[in-house]
Length: 94
Image 1 (cartoon, rainbow, N blue to C red):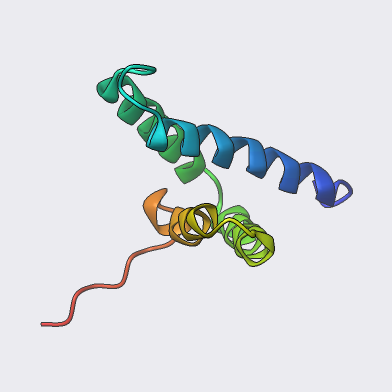
Image 2 (tube, rainbow, N blue to C red):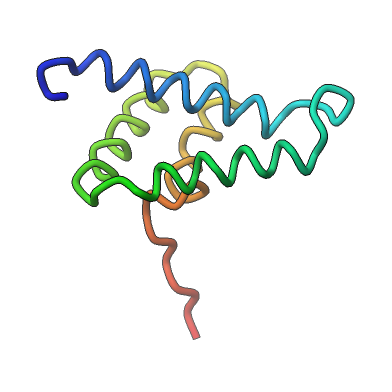
């Protein structure tokens, strides 16, 4: 996919947009359990990527967040890598 760098970024935008939809839609639009199930499915599929591919997506997400002008969307993009399991969350200090 290195020959098509714009393709990766655009597909990532699509995945993030659908995840954002399920995260933010009202239960009158989509049942809450269905929304969570869809988000978990997306996280599962992203979790199947190689570590190198996950790392690339994390970089692409950072670039998208840096360019985002909507503060709520930027915050969502910043948290996305962790929320979707692309990066390990830091262990809490004991």
